[in-house]
Length: 160
Image (cartoon, helix red, strand yellow):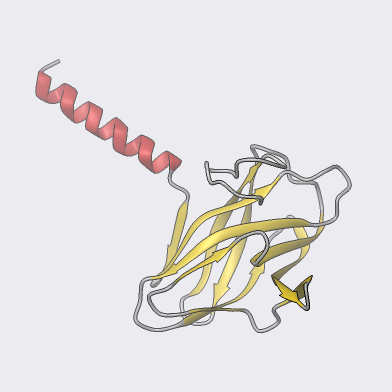
């Protein structure tokens, strides 16, 4: 094999490997990066979901809802401090995604709640979900399940 052919093969393999490890999705001007969840204890009825949304466009959008076949109900939630007490509430009208902004859904803030989970999320598994945006429309994504504690799926730090 010639040196040039080896170079092309190496370049192709590195691009293919990079694509295999990438964990992002796109619809219109909306990018969804690293949808992930944590492994759940057996019998636990709810699980959390986390991801980053980037609006690369010049117009605001809104994440309206999420559905998934792994849960009876999926809700958008926010945790916030009120009078020194951490409270969680459902966001019935969705989550604003301003033009040119990045919105992170993470523990202790905006996040996804998978309710009435049919089978506990297991580390190393993946599950599908559909995010629906007001302007960009629906997009199919795949959540990666990481360990119950420690480093998040996909190598991201956090208490997801």
